[in-house]
Amino acid sequence: MYDFVVVGVGPAGARFSRRAAERGYDVLALEKGEIGTPLACSGHVSTDIWSITGPGAREELFQNEIYGARFHVGGPQSRAYPFYKREVASNVIDRVGLDRHLADLAREAGADVRDGYTVTGVTEHRDGVEVVANGPDGTETVESKLVAGCDGPRSRVREELELPQPDELLHGVLAFSEEEDHQDFVDVHLTAPTFFAWRIPRGDAGVEYGLAAPPGVQVTRHFEELIDGYEIDVSHRCSGAIPIGPPERVTSSRGFLIGDAAGQTKPFTGGGILYGTTAADHAAREIDPDRPETVVDYERAWRNDLSRDQRLGHLLRQAYSLPEPVQRIGLRALSGEIGVHMDRPTSLVSPAHLRALVSRLRP
Ligand SMILES: Cc1cc2nc3c(=O)[nH]c(=O)nc-3n(C[C@H](O)[C@H](O)[C@H](O)COP(=O)(O)OP(=O)(O)OC[C@H]3O[C@@H](n4cnc5c(N)ncnc54)[C@H](O)[C@@H]3O)c2cc1C
Image: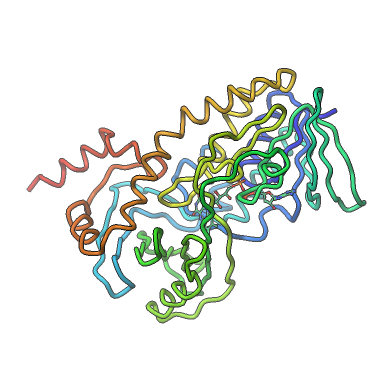
């Protein structure tokens, strides 16, 4: 019997598998497709990403560095309100490569990571969990002390364990143009209802255009308007879901969710790579497979760490729905140098941010 069966090998599953294997646990990680594909993510992350990667990662994955964002209330021709830091705020990275890199680290730590296995059933028993998967050789059943649902926004494990859904699933779309662009600003357009559209320069890898909005909104129409505004041809269109939550509970008697499955995203950007991997570290540290009741310690630990930022993130998102004249006044008043950490809205009251505000007052 395994200590943990991990379902899904995205950033959250790979990170948890690595950390649990490093603690000496017997870990089997099952990924339904080929690790890293299909792409449905911008890979725009704070520089903290390099704290969870291994040697050589930056050379392999780095595409561009970003100092700030230009906000627009309308399309590309509308006025830009820049928010920026003096140092690099974030990096744009190869997201497919990141998943493969994190999965390799999990393997090196001793986890048995397999792709081509789709988990279709999870049953909790008093003394363990049965996980059913369709693999290359047909249907297999594996037994484990606990199951980790790291299987993304439409989590099968969440459904099987009858855990609550996140409040909302946004629909995100992406496409790429081939223009080389090493600019160090992203553009954010507050044109999509309750969310936004974006342009991300990816260095030699071209430029990404994207948009996310709630279901029911005509995402494609808004996306076409964005592309038309930039007067650019795009290809490689892809899409994915962004969970906004989190749900009130992400643990059961022998199961727990991490990452998008648990709604561990930033409500004001939809970014989830660093929240998911941070929560994975809490899970590996807190959960003892021989004491399944320790899932409660994980639930407490990740919420203690992330829930204040998530609550503040919800508040920030409300600004996307303000009337346009109010948005313009707010952006004009607040734009300029900032000291905020892109993953931590609570850093709005940090010394770094206050210093940045004071520096604007200097002649
Ligand atoms: C358009 C878009 C842009 C985004 N941009 C950013 C960004 O710039 N920065 C950022 O931080 N975040 C971004 N995100 C969010 C980010 O992609 C997610 O938060 C992140 O991928 C979550 O990681 P995860 O490991 O929890 O889930 P995932 O990355 O979704 O991984 C889940 C894995 O589980 C596998 N799986 C699913 N079901 C099964 C099953 N039944 N059996 C076995 N395996 C299964 C999937 O194939 C997948 O590999 C974006 C999302 C979207 C949609």
